[in-house]
Length: 190
Length: 190
DNA sequence: AATTAGCTAGACCAGTCACTATAATTTTTT
DNA sequence: AAAAAATTATAGTGACTGGTCTAGCTAATT
Image (tube, rainbow over all chains, first blue to last red; front, side):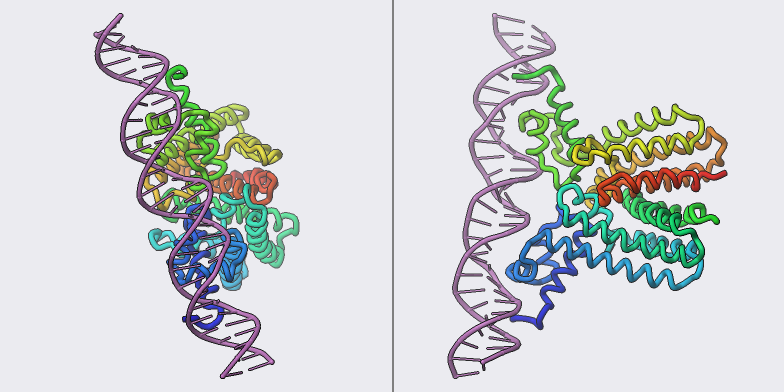
């Protein structure tokens, strides 16, 4: 009856991470998460005693780490930051080739949806953004860009990617993301 | 009992436009819209017989027109597209000085939240985006930018603004938008 | 083996949701 | 003035929500 320790917790968190990031916070009900995870309701409150908000915060943190992993991998492919960032954006864009089966999206929707009503969720999203931006910044500084510029343009790039995701959802294809990838050359022209 | 014709409809639509754009679709209930508008429930379904989705579509269309108005006004202030677009972005950024009393935001949240579950809402959001981008594009072409570049960079700029809004919500201030405004010079460098 | 701790399982709760139905009131048309 | 149309007003509906509760099962400890 009880699977090995922590299976339920991990299943719930995985399902939540996916559903919250595809559908948003308010459109995702706990019963749907439970159904997708196969876990019983009692386990949800046992593992996440502070309820839906706690679950969402942990889902945002998980997504943050996932994207960080992707960024690290993509940034190790090339020395040139333009190429790395373009590669990363194109990687996201490719997910829109099969939009019906989107498995993950960065935390933009969660941030836009929750920042004004949940301070803990806002700060979780902010941390995610800042963590990614630091990776962009480090890569730029490593390749000789000036510190302040690197920091500021990292925020701009991250914003642009989030916005291009939204724009791609409306377009029902990745075209806006591919355009955003192209524009990295302009932003990072030396 | 009955105010002059169409007051209820306009009140409902105004309240809906504000609430949907600040809170998102799923976090906004019809009862809250009614409370803010002062209209009776029967009027809601009388004027919007297809219910919540229809109301949301009309709210998106209304916001699209509002922002178009702002863009036209801002684009008439200067010849230089860089200055116009920066002015427009700074105008949005100023709204974050009093984030508690945000009255409107463009349709990014609605698009991100609804594109995957409502085709009519997705197309309404897409129309909004395309309408704004056309204004950017026209201004750029008028000032000598090449057609294809103007069209593509307009999508990038619009994406960047939407993303910077999301980023500013997480930041709880307009700083990411001010950075986005600065980066327009890079994108539009001739 | 008995006890304790961890976890599962699912019934239950009060409240909210979008929407329906219909009588009543007001406005417009004839 | 009477009739028709437009609009208001509100009670009611079934489904769903996040969360509570508690008995029971399993795993770990004594």
